[in-house]
Length: 167
Image 1 (tube, rainbow, N blue to C red):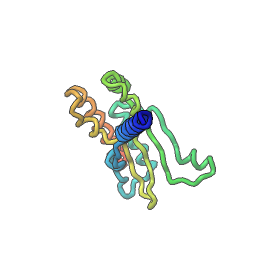
Image 2: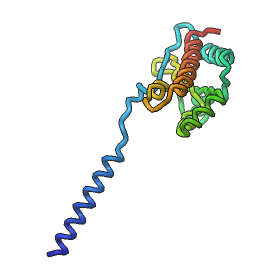
Image 3: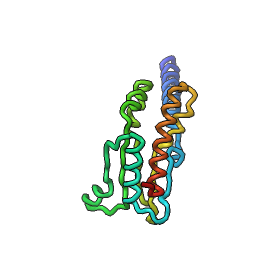
Image 4: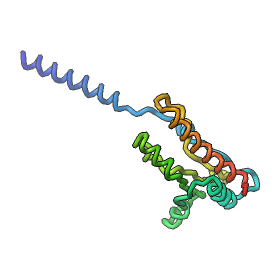
């Protein structure tokens, strides 16, 4: 009888521990649309014009274009059809260094990306990560928030120039 009681105790303890771990391991659900900033290209601005405008504006703002990923071309090369999807990666190396020094986890978000993507109706959009999620975090100090705000503003200016076709 003692063995049955002990076994029951162990099973209930294991069950409670397992359930607690399962609950604590749950991941918060994000609304993906809240994690990005997106801007539609103005009517009459082609995707190619937008890309050229973004590159020129980035150069003016002294932020380097470090990579271009023509994702839709790769998809087509693999035999699938795809709407236009292109990823442009921009970086200010010294700012990136300071962000990683502040918190190593920021390395996962580098370099900053702006994606050009066509929706199902053919409307072209420019999208980037919503940096306000980080800027407004209460644990970050004023200097970090200023740096992150500058990066955000730079990306938004690049996107605005692209969306309007500003050269």
